[in-house]
Length: 218
Image (tube, rainbow, N blue to C red; front, side):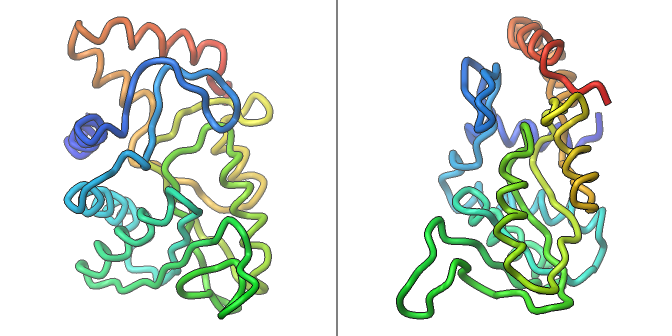
């Protein structure tokens, strides 16, 4: 396993973002592990998370100028921290996020921050994709921006689960909307990491059993 993947998984565990147990995902599925960016609680942690996203961005998009979109609520801090990390590497990208409810006073509208203009490209930053529900919600919101194209999406972890059919949620999103979805690590990396310690045998078995039922076929 590449060193940065190991470092990232250790970071997720240390920050309490990666947990094992019994959880319910946004898709409604009962899952044996949970990844929650909402558990990032300190300046040092969110700064570190932004650095991982910035590294992934640079690896996949280089110095491409885009606008970062962080879906409310967890995506907001990711977009801010990633934009800060990118600026430190010489790429100053604007960011924005949505309100859960449109504001009907003051400046109004559903977006906060930089609002992309026609011809500009957006990169969605999310914490995780399970069934693709959150990305589809984001695309519905972003469809209100005329002439704006989504260039890519970045998530912490590819859970490699079925979407609405037998294909992975990421594959379905890519086919439906025509942009790539990148992850820092995937569930296989997490399993490989856990297998290095025999104390994790139960969690490994539960994840494998879950994927046997809900894992993508392609």
